[in-house]
Structures are given as structure tokens and as C-alpha cells.
Image 1 (cartoon, rainbow, N blue to C red):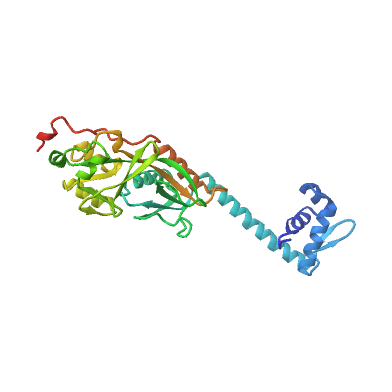
Image 2: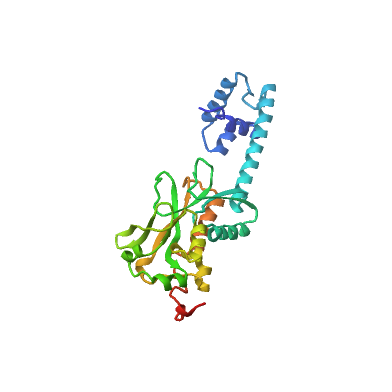
Length: 308
């Protein structure tokens, strides 16, 4: 039993003026209505209604209680209407966490497109070099990459992040282009602190330790080192698309040199998902192709050895 039991029935009896007709409207028996109202009176310790064979009237205490009940019902109806409106056109705040290990321009651009479409939303974007705590930090959605470890959360695949090996033309002219994983030991590999790269394989992925004179977990720093001609880098295709298009960086040939990892939109619960989160998830899944990303200009230009 809750404090609200009987309130609905009490208000109907007063509004209609009859236990019998209130029961008909609510689709229950007259005895059920009578018991609900009696139990309510017992909990309050006052008589709310004067009952006769011909009519039902409010006691002074009942009149005060009835007025408050009507106010509460009005508040509820306004809240329900507001929630319904939010479900038709999302409003409020949408909190999104992005992993910044390889820059956020690509994903942040997509989030900005969504915000432009739904301009009544306030979009708060947080970036970090590590995966955010979805529940602890009260985010609506976080974007994560690769294998997911937390099975208590829900996730929707939205595409792939494809990595390729790249370096400047001058670096390849001086050191040659690797033809397989074994050749990587001959190169100065620009890596994160782990010192590992991953590649596609028939079994899923293969993890390879590489050596180099530059270690940093920030993708922008790795890109800067690669652009300077310091060594060979493994970076997402979308992260270096401008450099690949201009020829400032060129990619290593061969399917062996790719690494494709899943991109996930992670959220906390599945039932009664708010409209803003539903729309954002739908936007992401249609915005990104499920195909692996490959640069348009991937091979060295024919005259790369003669480039200035």
C-alpha cells in the first residue's frame, strides 16, 4: 500500500458525485471504490465524505484534502505533458564523452552536426585520453573503441576506426617501405607508451611489439613526429586524411598493414531510453558506414622519389 492508494478513486467520487458512477467510469466494482476510499480515510484519520443513500458530500476536512489532490493532479498532468513534448522534440542536456587519444575532430564534427539538427538540446562534450566513467560521471553516451570490458552497460556498434601505417616520402626513400610484420624491426616506430601495434589477422587481431625513439599516447604528438620524418606511425585513416591527400604522408601497401577496430556508442540502460539518446544513437549508426575506412590516396605517387 502507498500513500496514493485511494486518492484517484476519491477524486472521481467527488467529481462525479456517486460511488456507483465512479465505479462505472473506472471499470471496477462499487465495493472496490468504497474500500479504497475507506482505507484512505483510515490512514488519514479523518472522514472525507458524508454518505447517504441519495448523495455524497465533502466534509470540511474532505474539501481541504480534495483541493490539494486536484492541485497534485494538475501538477502531474503538466509534468506528463512536458515529458511528452520532450519525446516529440528533444530538449534538455545531452552529455557525451569522447576519447581523445587520436583527436576528436572527426567524432566532434559528427556531434556538432547532430546538435545543429536538434537545436533545442544543450550538448555538453567532454574529452579525455581515457574512457570516461559513464555511470559515475553521469554521461548519457560515451564513444569507445575496440573490445568492451564492462558487460553491465549497453552498446551499439556505429562503425570502425581503421589504422594504417604511414610516414613521409623522404622517410620511405631513406629506409624503404615495410612489406610484412617482420620488416617493422628495421624501422623507427612512433608508438604509444605500450610499445605495441595491432593488426588484422584471420584470428581477429595480432599484437606486435615494435621499437622506436618516440613514445606518446597523444595521437597529435605522434602525427607531429611522423610529419617531421622521424619514423613510421600507425594512425587512424580519418585522423590523417589531409596528410594522405596532399602526399605529406603516404601509406604502407598491403592488407597486412591495416588494423580495424570497432567503434561503440555506450549507454547505461536499455528500457525507457530518453528521446535525445535514442535520436543520437540513430544518428550515429546512419552517419558512419560499417565498411572499413581506406584512404583514397594510399599508394606512393609514381614520382615519389623525385619529390622536393
